[in-house]
Image (tube, rainbow, N blue to C red; front, side):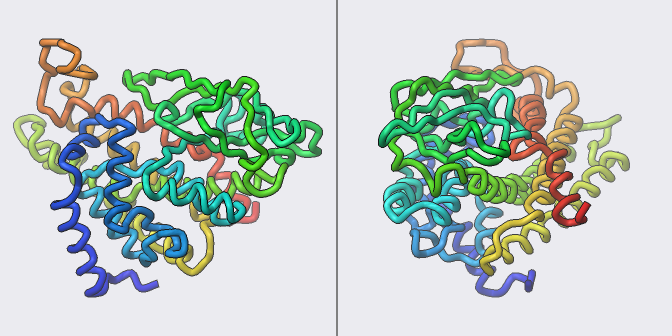
Length: 398
């Protein structure tokens, strides 16, 4: 593909930048960088995009998408990162929607897709279980068919933003006697308000509430909520994960992270000089920028393939590995740059009434929590170790 920006691309970038400067909701400005946001904030941003006609940058026009080129989508992501907008949660928009488009019936597409794009429904993912993470096929949550309904029992864990969600897509075992673990799994959509669904918070080491346990106790779900064919959910699950891994690369947000890192390193001192002048530290940033540049071109090539109707393949595993490694290195270097200022953190200050001011500049207060939180990126979406196995099998033929 041609990786040079055309005059039309440059004009599109300016259009997006101007719109974000003028129309990004005032109530949302700065919330993402301060790690402060609610369900209503996410939905407000989605509805704002929808009203502009940009609600689904990667969707085909027939489902209400923009019809943008791969380069335009990339530019949009860059400009949103530059403006530090809230990210659009991927669960409905980028993960479930491609599955619905490819495998759902017409009634399901007509019902669920408009509610995703217009910000009516907030989705979460029901994949991982306490004994089934990277080995997802060993999941135990079961769905027993009784007449026109499934009765679901089991537990999911690490349900990101499940406490915000209206709906959850769940992998369930519908044929316990299947010959292989990957067989006998179905992909079912569940209303979170259904009796028997319980969400329990998991408080992470940074003191935040982002993930949850989700329990299903005799949850009655219409058979009409089955996506595709019964017992073929593993195929849909793999299709979804390929799209998830591509999105996890996070090139645009990482570029903003390095920009912020350079700003911090230009004012934090090392023996009386800005730490950016330390040759060892400067070398680390340069190596990071080189790796990110290589990842950027890999993502653009992947997006171009998708635009040609070629879904993400093993390259999504490459994007996932390198993208998450870069994200973690950015948080490591940022924590190194702020030094001791990164240690204390008062979540909720000053709303909780604490009159002890955090030590150091504002930009330092979230560095330790962000460092801790980003350790997860090499695990979710299929651990990086599993991605290496996929590459070995599908690319190297080992």
